[in-house]
Image (cartoon, rainbow, N blue to C red):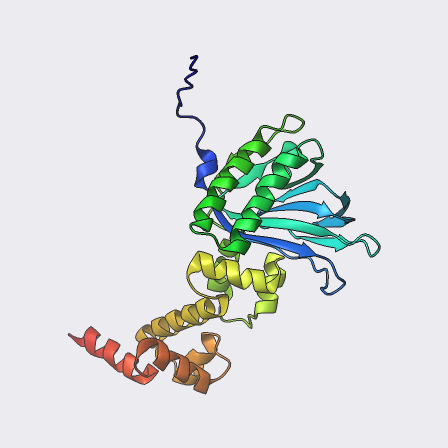
Length: 278
């Protein structure tokens, strides 16, 4: 009897740093609007059937059966189905990795007809596991995802690497700094979305993940912090301090201050003066 032994060596483990967030199966039935959107994670998109187009940033690309799309986090995109040949596709959301492509792009679209059996198998195997809710289905899907990523890396007609997703969101840092510098101004979610060039709802989600609270909550905290400095170190009236701190009215300031600090603004000022006297 002949025996072949293939010892395992420690190879590239980058693919194991990711986390499968979801897998979905969709078929266009003229029942949803096609709106550009942004994810804080990478998305894989496999066209199972039909045709249409894929809008990424300001570019539109034709897509058809067996096309594969990879879009990194923070890239605006949406799919548009052909009315006569409705799109049917499987999508996967992955946290913790991004792909680097040629020409420094953050996305790629390619035909996988030659690898259709491989890529389709792993995508649909994950989908079936989640639909049937088998025992340890999430573990199975995570392992299938690792294999799928390796299959993608093995492709030779284009080059990309797997790398950990950058954790610090530049847009969130920009928003946070803007709030800290302009808290006394009239700031709204719409103005912050316009500043960051992000969808308003995605902007709130990404900022909350990055800073631990919503943009409006962070704005309120920043204004409270500024008001505490003024209460402790100036003789401005409560009404003036509310105005200087960016609150729309004294009553809203009083309500926000009490909720945040557990005491009124006047009581806080008295406690600061008492501490200074000792």
